[in-house]
Image (cartoon, rainbow, N blue to C red):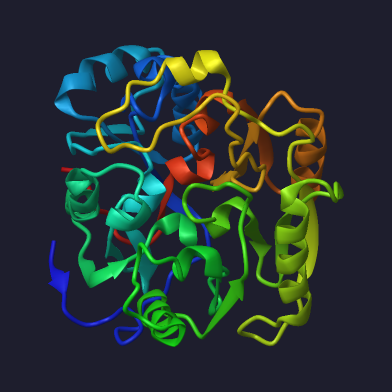
Length: 376
């Protein structure tokens, strides 16, 4: 693995869209007592199903520390093992999207990773836990495990869930997240945009005002917006004017309706409903966490940022979170129409959302190239 001192755009690299073919997916085995109820016991069976679905169609790279390696292998023992690879890379939590590498390709069969700085969604200002050194170090180790070269973005703080791209020059982000004071407070909006364009190999950034209400990531874009394909998008939506999400989604819709992408196309916009009933932490769930000093705590009645937009696209599939809500079926119908060439796979996500995110947040795609790298 080599660390490049140039930028992806200067070298002819760009971030491909998630809907492009994958070589594989990174996941991290969930164990953090302050994120997962009952030390991860409730969410781990969901991970088994997630790994089952993904590893059936692409390589699955599972980060798991040595303390929990035996547990993970035992729970996954009934699955075909050919496409499951265990990486002994320690992390502080399981959000591979946010602290893992963002991949770029050159269209000539090469791929490289990008190592952003990770500070637990806000660092000293409003981060969710104080010790995130292992998370911040993971991206470089993940690229090294696959023998992929990497770009170091320096001190620039960015999470993978805060960006979406169409693979044709367009980047979509939220102002609420990227302009938050806990990330890059010494940079202007214009400077942040220039950094994104250079490192993602893009031509245009579209700034949505907001994300999902009460999203503790300062409103990541991947909870409110996603690309179906270039020029066609999904937006989290509610018609309930009494819901705080109503005003946020209206503001985002106004921006999207007025915008054009990097190729000059107007967007086709599909509205994807949020759950009809807000998903909130129960007292039993709140009591089953074990928080460290300085860690953000969950309280009974706290509204979670539940969104069907936080789905994951793997080869031939849409992995869709389900909340036991009457909108579960409607979300499945809409995504089936948007992705007719893919199988929509609904998986129960209650145990995931109590950790603060969902399937998209847990996963990080590795684009397909002509490289034949073998995991170390």
